[in-house]
Each structure stands twice: as structure tokens, then as C-alpha cells.
Image (cartoon, rainbow, N blue to C red; front, top):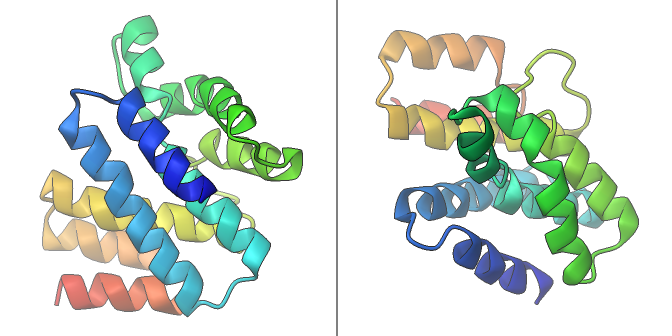
Length: 161
């Protein structure tokens, strides 16, 4: 039920911005599927799905403060509003801390640690590659350099066969 409430709050947060709402819904769906296929534990799955829903929450403040939605600004501006939202919804502190860490690093691709982090990055790439209409060469580069899970790699390969 918390995830459903969080989805509702994020839709309200991005009211009027259908593109951003569609984006986090798709990232959440891919993250959920990859996490389940990779059989990560229940706590990590909760953290992963929560992070997938709120991963881009920093975009609004980034665009106001820096006039940019660049990943580095999202990482700076995302944790505070995510923490506030998650606290209001009654998430455990340990979940909030990890989700905020993932938000603060989801555009940082060196030193990825943890299945939740890896899967979040892969899910975000699956959506961004499509939304950005990238070349086959770019897909292959991402596959080689970013994707590590068998399930995420299989989804990428299937989507771009």
C-alpha cells in the first residue's frame, strides 16, 4: 500500500508534467521486474522500487535553481524532497537512507555497489535509451559498460534485437 501511496504522491508532485510521470512509472516497472527476476531479497526490492519511483524527484528543484535537469543537479537536489515525502508516508529510516543514497548517485556509474543500485541504473537506462531515441551503437556501448545483471541485459537485448 505504501508504494501505491508513493506513486500517487509523485504523480501529484509532477502534476501537469506527463512526460516525467510516464518516465518514473516506466523505470519503476522495469526495476520491479529486474529485481524479481534477479531474486533480490524483500528489503532490497522495497528499497529498489521506492528509489525507482522517486529517483528523479530532484528535477523540479534543479530546473528552478540551476536552470538545468542535468543528472549531477538531480543528485544534489533529490534527496531532501524524497526524504520529506518518504517520512510523511511512514517509511523506515533505513529504507529512507538507502533510497536517498541511490537518488544522490543514480547518475554516477563508476563504483556501483549493491544490487538495488545496479538495477535502478539499468531500469533508468532501459527507459532513457528509448525516450532519447539513441543509436544502436550507443545501446551496445551501454550494454557493454553499464549492464551487469542477466535479467537487465536480457531485457535490453530483447528490446533492441
